[in-house]
Length: 85
Image 1 (cartoon, rainbow, N blue to C red):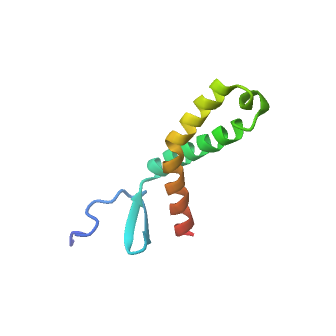
Image 2 (spheres, helix red, strand yellow):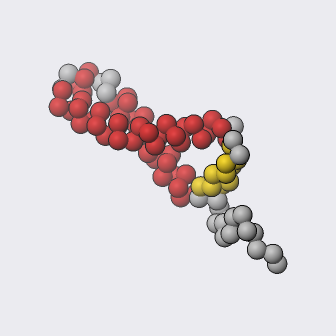
Image 3 (tube, rainbow, N blue to C red):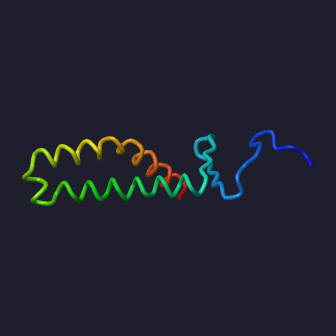
């Protein structure tokens, strides 16, 4: 059996997509983790509009820091999802 020189060993549950000539490979656990991060981002975004949080500068700052820490990851994951569709 010929070896796949491009991919080598690929996990059977890997998801491979192509966009702009680049290939992206994500395993199911990686996708699950990214989806969890995305859900947390959405929760934090929603929490920022809750009156009790919005009126508490310290809590708002804490939430804002956590949200900004995952914003780039979520943005890239969402972009990948758009490209896949």
